[in-house]
Image (cartoon, rainbow, N blue to C red):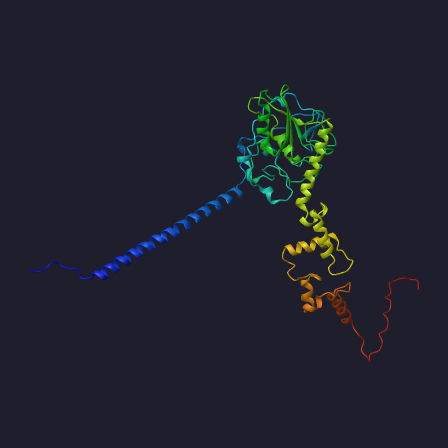
Length: 402
């Protein structure tokens, strides 16, 4: 009677196969475990990059439908209509009826701001209709659709919208303003009187830039808002004109007059000086700023390295900082402590590196002396056997006199 069927493979071979299979499974699991975090990281990096690009390249959103916008003549704010500038002149006060009419639109910076054609042009102005919330052009607008920053500088004779300032304020402290004073404070009237009036004013006016200080007169419904940057105050004046806060009031936004308090005047002057100093620090090199602020290390370094190996010589500021800028940009790779940066043009013209080394006791470099010497040798030398050349005769110029 035949016995039970046996496996053709021996137990050792079966064990080896099982061990191989388990090893393959283990390696596959390890590869999956190693690949999973990498794919997750790559997906996270791609998502993060896409978000940054989408935020950076977002175009400006049209605030109103262009088809619903109709061209209307400007409201009469003066006595004479100027056909060249398409506006009224001769009036120093706005119409009392128009100042009590609520604005139809309001700017939403988070949704409306974005790139326009003006971002490609340096020194562009900001869009006045964007500040009022009624620009229909969107990315095709020729003006900026964003908030002003501390580095957005303009001519003192114009505001951030490109409108010309005047020598004095209007009688009602409205309009563009004056170029005789840097005004960063706005007067806000007709505020609904509540217990938290300062918190409400701060929340609404902080949308248009960094606020320096707010002073509220609760009983009168009046607030004075001071911005850190003058351009932000100009933008906020147009953006909050005839707008409402948490209630249905219609704000009266004007320029604030000079505060008669001496402490406030000193604080205003100090803030303007600090803002100008910060702009200068951003524009000038770090070494120059340290030297101006009295850093002893920067002065000592300039005195030692600014001599360029010449005893008693100190390089001018423009030469010294041009050298530092060249070193930072990687153009001063071939430098020497006593000779300064080697001119690449001199190397190409002379063809020898040894000719551009400067002697410690001379004023001119050897490269300069070699160039002068080459210029002298290139002059035409008369041959030994040739006769001297006669001087050139004057050409007749048609005069009757001898």
